[in-house]
Length: 375
Image 1 (cartoon, one colour):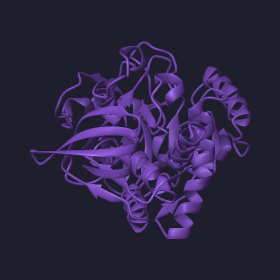
Image 2 (cartoon, rainbow, N blue to C red):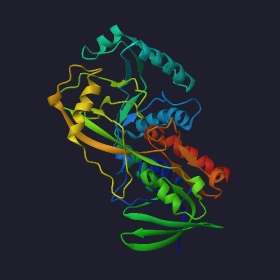
Image 3 (spheres, one colour):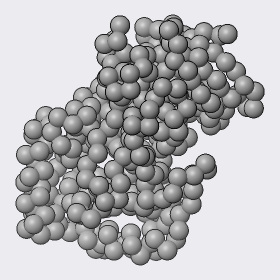
Image 4 (cartoon, rainbow, N blue to C red):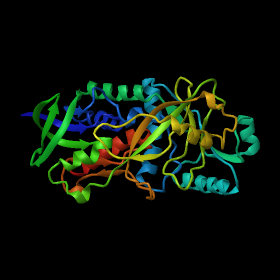
């Protein structure tokens, strides 16, 4: 039976970051993914925003790992010439109640270590763009965008340069803990393969709970309920009226940050995502219903009243693996080591949605630390 040091299930941005970090100390890391390439699910279907760590409760994993990850990510990109732009983000209010929310948000951000937020008056915002409608705002200068595909390519290249291997079209079947680690069964294009691994990292994103259910010894009490939340994006043709990202104040009855304006590395303006909980399935549905356009226009016109409806077109969609249900309050990342499930050498990652891209390098460091505690 073939032996490896670690198996990472899932070649999204977080799985690749974990593999790159572990491969610095482990000589034989195997990354598997059921798709033909890396990053084909949540990691390639998002806003590509580098978040500052503003919104999350103090001392939560999302807050700590986002703040640490942002610094590490910008440094990583600079050293490896990965395209990124720290454009900055405006969070805009429309009334006194929303301005009060921004004041509370500024305090929460400061408690999370984000001390560079700057208050923007109505005059400041009008100077920024005459197309922007808002009574006040917060400027987050350290928020930016990144070429996520180039970033994932770089992570995989780094892992492979350290001796790691990537196996595409490879389905995780089951794993059994042993006194030496794990016996695993994999399906590679219909052929079953068995191997041994000292460590097992479940970073399967949308299918992380399915993988956990097929690891012997992981009780149902250690596997949370995972919700699929679909987000749609619309693109906007023509020159963008905004040189920064623009986010509305989040509404109290939605589970995301609202339909915001961002741009990609090529300068394409886009709006999204919305939040639509969907049923879990074997094949994710990434279609976009054109009937969503009126809902998008209504949300966008609150801060961009002059939007030309004819220039707004459906673009793409993504699905987030959320632990937070449609009526739930905040749910943090779950990064479970043996203290949770009792199995040494196993790390289960659940609910790694936004800010997972920003936090990816910090998550990898956290996983490495959890494994080191077990030695």
